[in-house]
Length: 149
Image 1 (cartoon, rainbow, N blue to C red):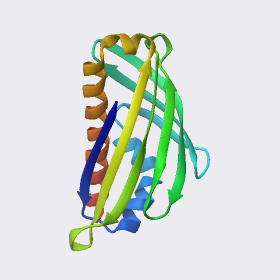
Image 2 (image 1 turned 30 degrees about the horizontal axis):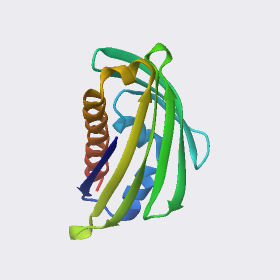
Image 3 (image 1 turned 135 degrees about the horizontal axis):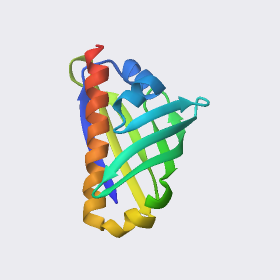
């Protein structure tokens, strides 16, 4: 399943870039995030608690940043195990461009797949939930970074 979106953030691109690489800011914005730990400049570990349809699960996984082009964007990929609920994996290409009034335009193109019990819920429910979670993250991120402007 594929998702994409665009947000205008009222903050300079360097501030948005720094926030995209700040585990504390990211953990505030990721829906259901219980812990996000930066292992290196390109690796993080995460623990999330999510409810997808009738299934609630805790996921533990790894996140990797690649194709880093500071301060223009990167690729973020991750995968997590949710025990009996199954697994999820996906990624996104995030790009930053100069926006209006000294702000920044953040664009993302994301894809996600699930397996196990989650895959049995049906593509429409999974697609809708994945799109909602992506939108919640980027909206929270835009709001958090924009408030610091």
